[in-house]
Image (cartoon, rainbow, N blue to C red; front, side, top):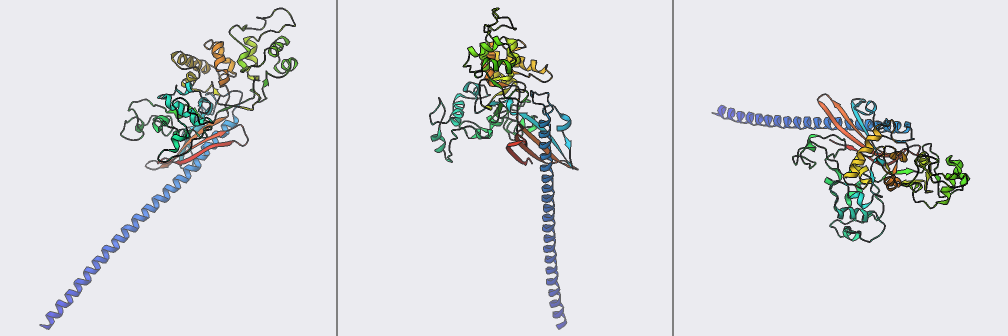
Length: 437
């Protein structure tokens, strides 16, 4: 009997030990699983960190490559045939240490400058409303007077999360998102990653961000048409300071511009020009001698041929820079049409300008050349002459660097920077870098 009791007691103890061992095993398995999971997670985190670091430097390499090409580019004129624009060999899908990068370079002078654009030009933007255009003008002006349907500081300061109005020039283009009525849909359009490619999420309606119309056309937002960085140096194609036609005597003008005395005399006698285009009108002779009176001492109006020869070398301002001029060699048809006043006739003329410049190897080398193909009249030229240029110095560089993986593409890092190549070394006006996924 005692033996049976002892056996039962022993069996009970063995059972308890067995249960304890089983629980210990479960706990150890759980610990191993957690440690294993954490290890895998740590490994993935480290791998992603390595990928991101690699892509950041590859993206920086793409930026530096673009800057090098911009610095090597001749500056007599800038067009879409230059290597900074048309260069798949150096910019498209370049392999670099287990990742690839692609570079896009955009001329900021190809856009309307938000700090100088008129209300009528702003109204040419797709889906622009008058109250939003007025609000933009109120944001950038230096007073507290409301323009038309716009708003001033009081509106922004009374918002739930209030802030101050700039009442000065836009410093970055994304600052436009602070203006009343400017939404991300209007600003970015469908191409929210700025790669110029219509991707699935940009044509799937409301299925995934961004919101889009679900068609097979890439709708660009205002970001594609606006800038706050563009300017034009007051220099000619050789980098020399332009000659102010409102200053200097006849001899200085004749010598500097290499024109005859009768033309120099006429310039001096008809001063106080607001634009270089004031030197010509619809009655200007086509060639030298067309308006000559035969008197060697007479002043003779500038003919169109002579004007075309000197247009890039003259100015009416002593300022070193002029903000907001549009490069007619790189501007889109949309931007050109806005400069020309909008409407069907402006759109047609913009198409003709683009067609003409595509026939030129280096684009148009002087703003006067825009009149040579016959589409732009003297009167039209006079309306836009103070707004246009053929050279650029400020560019946006976007670089997308993607890590290579055995199973498809890895993490992507995007770098966006705005550079001014006129100084040495180049000046960075804006910089952003971050992972896309």
